[in-house]
Image (cartoon, rainbow, N blue to C red; front, side):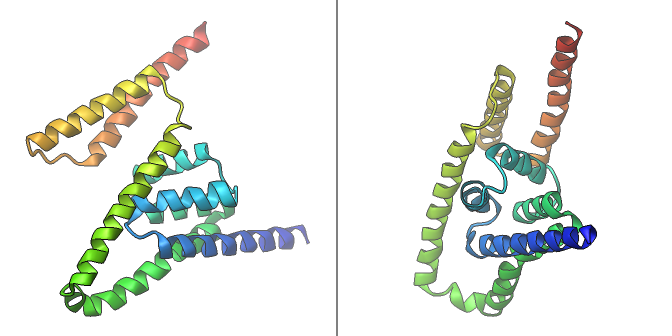
Length: 198
């Protein structure tokens, strides 16, 4: 009986995740970064399924692994909340609408882009997406635990990105992530060891 109740609870949670990510996947126009703002509004503020710290952790892990950000976020949260079933349902939810829309649009894409109204609509969508990204960035920045090391790393990455842009140097974001991992392990690990010996 207990196992049946657990399985039923897991299924209900997985179904809830499917519907939530179906909604997010349908309305998160603009790709992965845009879904973060909607994800925070839906899961942190409305449903209170996770908090801001967990969202930041999810984003860090999802950005550090191969694949689209939205799919990684859905899979990670689904597995965390309801195991493999939750991961499957959440992932299916987030890709369902985009898959069918892209399938339909791909059949008529060349004709659609010829219309000026469609071009202007995409320009307006781009502006809205930029606003959403900036909004969620400021919201999450308030929740991040900031110290002098994290500020230094941020400034170094920002400076490197500006220099690479000025000199037109292609630099993959994976190197930023790998560099952050190595520096984080060395610096934070070193300081943790020192603190524990006092």
